[in-house]
Image (cartoon, rainbow over all chains, first blue to last red; front, side, top):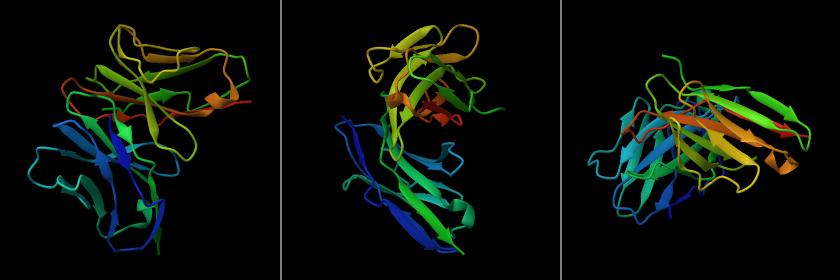
Length: 114
Length: 113
């Protein structure tokens, strides 16, 4: 069974600053993928970034980067240069490489202040 | 390339009625997944389908819920005799073969009165 833990229910960040969202996971799978999704107030789920467990380099996508520490089973999302449009709920998720089901954390609400 | 389409975006039903939620995957995607999000919670997996096949429905409630993905047309999530506890956002996601990344639709918000 897979479990995702996001311990920060809500965070405030000043515009243009960086913010780190925590995510830890538990799995017995040897191969797995880690994902981050953004859910703005409009409700859609937007894919942000993906990290495979065997990827040696941390994933980056524009202002998003994933700080992957396999030994600690953590996959924190870093958003650099925060913008007002980054205000949203952020979900960490994981799936086994051969297991299509995604398991989601409870989410972290980010509010960006001007 | 259009994204994953879901309709309706909002659906109101009275207890005992049926709800039909539709999902058209992205072009080239043959795998469809349904998830449910209760208020203030993360998404929970319900069912995984490929064309004309249910691959895994381990997350589906045993009664009243069914899903299909016919050869032609959208995937349908059907909830019979809805109850208030069915009120939630239902998300559909799709992926191409041999890809881990799932792309989500905008969701259908179901409200049962």
